[in-house]
Image 1 (tube, rainbow, N blue to C red):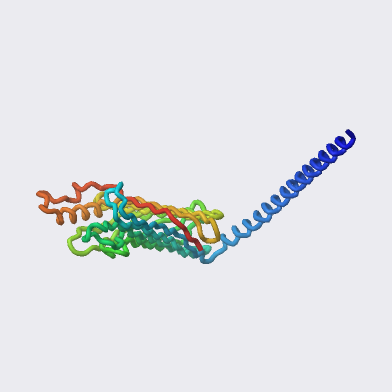
Image 2 (cartoon, one colour):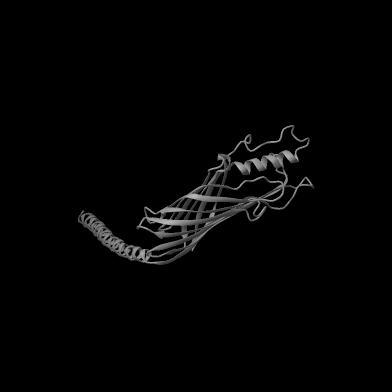
Length: 314
């Protein structure tokens, strides 16, 4: 009986000692976490001072997504023997010069993707990748500060495609007006005097016009997160059908070093592009339609794209 009591006492003693040790370790861990938080707070404060200093800010982040598949005798689907693939690349570089009295902000958005679906039972079917998404935009904004948040500015923005039909169409916006920066990472441009040059070749029918340019850009990095959203709109004074807008969004989350997960999507409305596509479709139709589409009768369907994959930032 005495031995049993002794063993029980020793057991509870060891348990109490272990529990006490665990509590002490947790308390010590909490102190370390508080110290890490305090150090990180001081580091963030220094970084904020560095970010506020005049000079260049240069960086980029992007997304790479893709998949490749092969099916042989997979009779449950309509094309039992096929190879398919999808590859997408998005790059968002920027170079901004921030000075006490002026700023010069430069950025680009490059979004390219290729797809293929090769029916191996059809000898006429192509086994090559074809262009799917083709977006190239470069922007340069210069402003002279009137106050900390308001500046007179001039903007140049060029948009086209790279893989196919380069500069056909191509859009060049040149204008002057004002830029508002209410917070650090938000830039709002309103240029009531802007000319939208449209370049095209061959049978395409595009019109340049005078109008207003509105751009809103929010680019920010918070820890492991990179985020960019950009809305660019042209409002024609001559004809509403000449107006257009594009909204692009890029998001990446860093998992390890500079590698992470990225997601991109974009929306666009451009009636001149919709009209020229409908006109080309009508010209290729056999037999041709009795009535050709016009700019006024063309449906301006919303354009969109998205891409999900690995991301890389630097």
